[in-house]
Image (tube, rainbow, N blue to C red; front, side, top):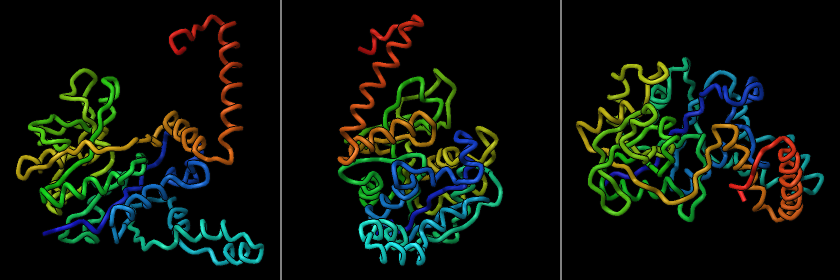
Length: 304
């Protein structure tokens, strides 16, 4: 029986939603509190039993490699100053064996995954997208791997979204359902508003059999003029079943500004060192904003 021990983390995007910050800094290195977003993704992969990780990077992404490498000068300084707690946090990312390959042209998510085909070989593998952080009792990817161990079929992780958000995601047209596992009739990439076949959106976690590379290799460009992974999944599903699994956990969208701010606030409220002061600040700030907006004619009654 095949199982999943390798994972791809595509990280070659330009991060245009966060310009100018991402002009010189990879968006994957933008921190949620003190930890870069990509470290949350790597930690989920490891907690799910992944042993080999390859990160697909692009130009200007060297900071990702540096983050997961040792920094002996910094470590020595922390040792001399007796800051052993910080030393452990600094060393933790470098304890993981990570490989890297560059996507030389920005041809889309499908092409980024295809770039790692030689590293994967003829094995099943996982894909984790850096825009999605998932907090759950059991890692989201682990939930998909357990389903793969039973079905031996490719699986995409899905969750429900609001109608107005369906145009932002790959959407599944679900068939028969068993528990939280769906057979899928069709996969649709970023359907126009009002045309989505369901509200089940693909949420940045995948487990694939290696045959997906054949479909990506022959895939024409799709939405946004890029080689879309969802389009290749749709074609693969016509030959061998690809399932959808509604995984448990709270998903944070850190790929857009509002989601990034919400994630930062939520994570900060879990930090006991700053929780009380932050809560007091938020209460005061909300009252200040409401008072100011009231003078301009805004009405917050619905929010209350």
